[in-house]
Length: 148
Image (cartoon, rainbow, N blue to C red; front, side):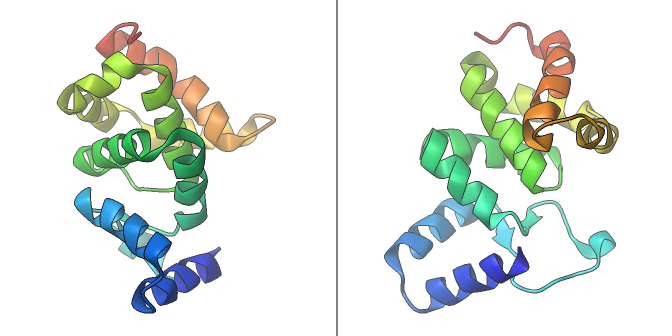
């Protein structure tokens, strides 16, 4: 996985237009792609290894949805991990009213026990990102309303 991040960093340095475009999007919301492995406790919110997930989410959901999701994660101080990115992108897409108030969504996300929800999602059958979105939805609904 970290190899993809290294390739992305190299592509940016080489002037690859797609990579530079994505890098500009990431920088605009305060996300830094880590090219080299770090110990988990040294990774800060806004730093990520999830470049392949971000690329896939961008392809599937578009720049605006991905940018909004990443921005609220960084603002909330939540770590930008692949399952968290996928879940947040899917929630921003599915609940546009939540996304229209980024400050409220960031605040609600910051109050979630993401680590506990991630642990539960990883024990469920299926895709951990989709499972995490399912687990986050009721808690966010309590804080933000229906969102549709």
